[in-house]
Image (cartoon, rainbow, N blue to C red; front, side, top):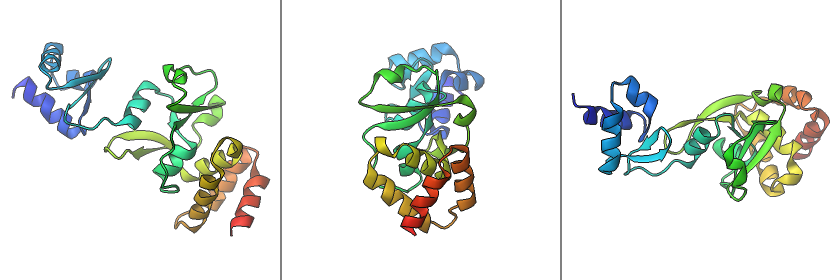
Length: 198
């Protein structure tokens, strides 16, 4: 089995994106990757990250790759959970306080929220991007709490519509929602929203 064939096979298995580590584990040499890059058979996206040039670029996956501790949150998480049909203009992510990422400079593309490291992983889960890659996102209940807490920085119409959708959703977990609300010290506020919308 040629190394080039191996790379093609890996790209198919991994929805068109491959890290140099994955290639190395499969026994593909650095030389093969370089040759395929020069001939245009694969495209370099980042240091150690390659893509099938016939693929569409997965912005969500690339963002996660560049910002390892980022978790998709707020309006971006609402979109992932089908609680909003509108893809926000900026990708929204939550990162631990003090964490630095070069994406912070790209203010038109990303909006970052900071939180204490201890609270950062509460409600963290994974989801699949429209291109079939796994990324980190907060679960529905954590997302609702985050949106209520930061409602002044978000689109009020989107938040209200998302809350209405959540209340009608099969599998909405109110006890989990109120548990998170207590941790984030917004229990009364969440209760008030629930009363208004039911």
